[in-house]
Length: 561
Ligand SMILES: Cc1cc2nc3c(=O)[nH]c(=O)nc-3n(C[C@H](O)[C@H](O)[C@H](O)COP(=O)(O)OP(=O)(O)OC[C@H]3O[C@@H](n4cnc5c(N)ncnc54)[C@H](O)[C@@H]3O)c2cc1C
Image 1 (spheres, rainbow, N blue to C red):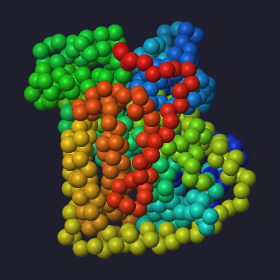
Image 2 (image 1 turned 120 degrees about the horizontal axis):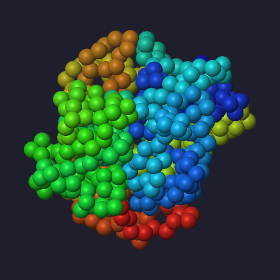
Image 3 (image 1 turned 90 degrees about the vertical axis):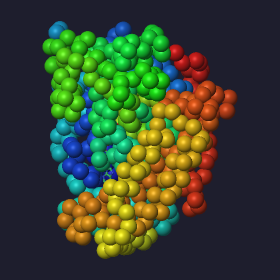
Image 4 (image 1 turned 180 degrees about the horizontal axis):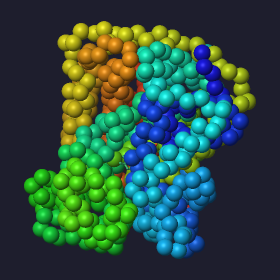
């Protein structure tokens, strides 16, 4: 049975940064990923990473923008840490070999991103995530103290007799064998849950596994209702057109040729925060000023062609291959689409969840630095700063204690569950059918605009799908790379996530950040300047509790862009 001081589940940016910090802290580390690490979803990050590195900029300005962007739901102590530590982290990455863009004088170059009062986004063309991930992976390979479990799937957390998290049940995807990996501390870094929605910008692997595993283990999920719809995605397929395009000067127009952001955010225009721009676009579309395909236009031709080809080359390919549009010569049709979950596993600034032995970092965690709305290019930063902190803290904790002994029957239970799915007759609904119904429901009833009726309908559908998933049928009966059976497990994880998102959205009877309730259209600080926590209770729906938002130097004020 493999044993480690620290077990990191997830090898995207948060997981890799956590593993490196834990190893640097003297711990023996295992890191698991259900795909090859450099295929983790962080690879898709395009536009860049924020840091107040310029002498004219300051971490306080970055922090204030983040607080305002969060619609004052972000915890300001965590935001201060993130923004203060950002410059050193970016320089550290640069020294490790990340080829950040440089300007004509050879200085690190920046672009503007939404909701930011300075151009503080550092980037590698529009493949920033890929560049970061590959450099971290090189570092990971250097450490003898880090064992990599690549293409292993974690199905559940395990505990010791005292109830402390003591490792995880994992399945080797290559041959279907099981292993319980024991650890003194477990860090979940399993990323987001965008696949609950259809369409989404997120990869197929973003199914909220870690969020569901932590929830099932009793960790509270915080502010799950806060789901970001990105303003510029391709209709129908959800592919992202990076905010970097607007950062470089692209403009938004409705079908009447009006640059409509003048009405909604006269000062920041297209570079208002994402919730504001997405609502503006959806309003234009809903009120009949969009194009017949339910979109508005993003005009990237405002950016000089040579600059597009230098700094936005990936979206040139996306436009050509997926929309038949040459973005250097004509506007491209876009709409708001599911992109990011601000909510997640509640943690403190060291990644601790409150469940002994369990940490979380990255998109699956909620500190909360993004509150009601994440600013573009703050997520990569979050993964790295809090991945590092979680890794370092877990290493200190792990090194100081004896190896726990997994006590429970989790392994047998998980083996039985999977064997049951594989041997089941084919009378149930297929994974893809249930997933499609879930995705369409969430996109229709729990997206940019929400109300009680539609949310109740969505909850009913999710509850029905939770019953149907118990008899879901698959085709592959084998053990080698059986993605079919993993799809069934992921679907169960997704339904847990979906239930919590809808529950949170029903509970928060106000409009703040990404949560816009047409039946409660105002922000209500008196009653709702607080986090919503959902905890599993074994019953039909989760327990709801609240926690304070930490304010340090910025009192809530009206949010205008
Ligand atoms: C198209 C796109 C562009 C973006 N661009 C930017 C940007 O420019 N700037 C920015 O700041 N943010 C951006 N974001 C957001 C950002 O990329 C993500 O929030 C961030 O990369 C998440 O990193 P992570 O390490 O938390 O998770 P991920 O990178 O998603 O990694 C999750 C890891 O967990 C593993 N895993 C999951 N479940 C299991 C399981 N059951 N068993 C084993 N392993 C498991 C996966 O294999 C993977 O290794 C973008 C997002 C998208 C969708």
